[in-house]
Amino acid sequence: MDGLRFTCQPGCTKCCNTEGFVYLTEEDLKRAAAFLGMTPVEFEARHVYRTRHLLRLRKPRYSQCSFLMADGCRIHPAKPTQCRLYPFWPELVANRDLWIEEGAKCPGIDQGALVQIGAALEISDEMRRAYPAIYGASRRAASSTDAA
Ligand code: SF4
Ligand code: SF4
Image 1 (spheres, rainbow, N blue to C red):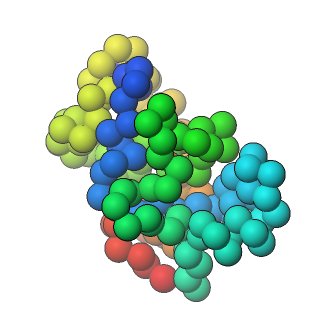
Image 2: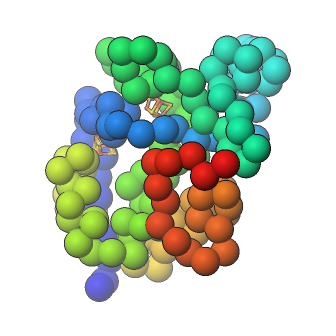
């Protein structure tokens, strides 16, 4: 495989509406808090659910993410790592069939620019480092189940 084609589509917010949890790193939490002019403690109390090993955004009742607005992500410059790196998640980069399947959720997949496989793997490694409780040392696939 030479690489993977991907270009995020203007106006699209499909991935933000996909069923699943949005996990944050400790740094993500601080960055998003600062972006909103809140302290990390305030941001966590209002927006975050913390378990022993993971942090995730609290989900509002009728949507997948409380930061999803009609015109996109309210915290776009400070959005969590998994949002920023999607769709170059380890389980998708490592498996061509899953990558193609993911195209049903992301219209940017297989569109536009070719991202060389080395660059795609580097991005997916950033995801592994950011979420060790999900990916662990054994390079297993992520799950939407909280591993805490
Ligand atoms: S934080 Fe922003 S990018 Fe991530 S799911 Fe929510 S709205 Fe989408
Ligand atoms: S679903 Fe794909 S194309 Fe749409 S916003 Fe998300 S990453 Fe971009």
